Image 1 (cartoon, rainbow, N blue to C red):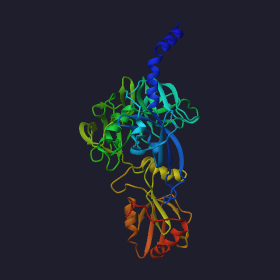
Image 2 (cartoon, rainbow, N blue to C red):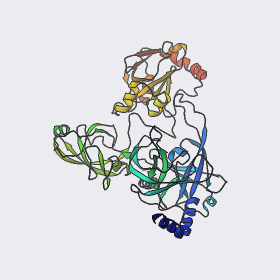
Image 3 (tube, rainbow, N blue to C red):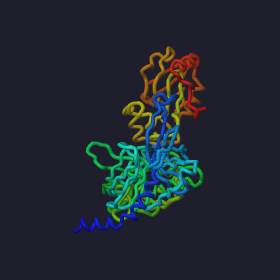
Image 4 (cartoon, rainbow, N blue to C red):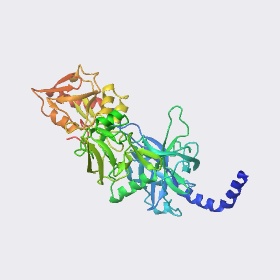
Length: 479
């Protein structure tokens, strides 16, 4: 009986749904890209260019919405509409690498003729039905897959490393789907951006949800993209009752313990290590660091920050030395001692007597086989301070007679140069201008030293650079 009822409803509703589906199909585009990423192990050069495809969707204002990773480091982009063979040149208007969203613009208005921009919906609920449109591998024409919302929560975005709100679905999301629209009842619920590939995982795909897309569009109204704010704290959960009592909290109190604060972040100068953060913008924080999203759904409390704009002011409630305190915080961009994955930027580097120095980053670690245990420890635990905003690291040694004895060295964080403590790349460059007693004296965190004859090292640089194809001894961001 149920089966026949469904078939009858499908037949009666077919003409209206077909028209709606046709409009949705026309609004979906395939994006062809050519990109070239910098070589984070040889920072003065690029890797080989590569090409691929992604998906996108036309929204109001004759704009195309897609993922940031589809257009990151791109050198050439074209788009084509579903059912068409013509490719149209397109440019990136705005890109949010932190939030996996980009806005593209086709200059020729003819591209948009006969296309109705998609309407935005709301954040879907678990078990809501979704349709994913796009151009995944396996064919050249538009593909449509269907599924349901498995959950809504904060996940790590692979492109940026940020933990942000996402829609999880069992609808098939495959390479090429990236940036394609995810519809609920004919309205945009999000754009597909990644799927889980770890052993044992099946049918786990993710979409950037509409609330983050709306936040992005509001952000770029000023004509530039500012970014997604962050609090800038390292915290621990307070599920242990004795921990709560030790900080003057009742047994049923909620909140998280602030352990450290990133220098120049939103929380710098406002919060202190040892504070218990109990509320953000009036929303109570659970002992595990989560807050209520809707009903019984919970999400990481960072979502309360990430959904706002840089420059917004919010109120936080803390318990400090047993007293409840309310404090205003002006939101800033994410600050990290060791930045996560970066895109559309060139690496920073400096070559001193053939020794190549770079700031530690996730890109650096990836390019150097994951780095050493010490470097990974710094990346996972340390925070920026007024004295140290970058971890200047010896990447490698370009072998030459002037640096003999150090040829196998690399992956060592620098402590001092010529007696000066090094807190960032610019400080390193400045210290190199003042050799002591005619020598460049390097001291590393592990206690090892490297000493170069300053005059001989400078004289050898043209030969070293020519031998290894280094165009400049430093990146353009350094003095």
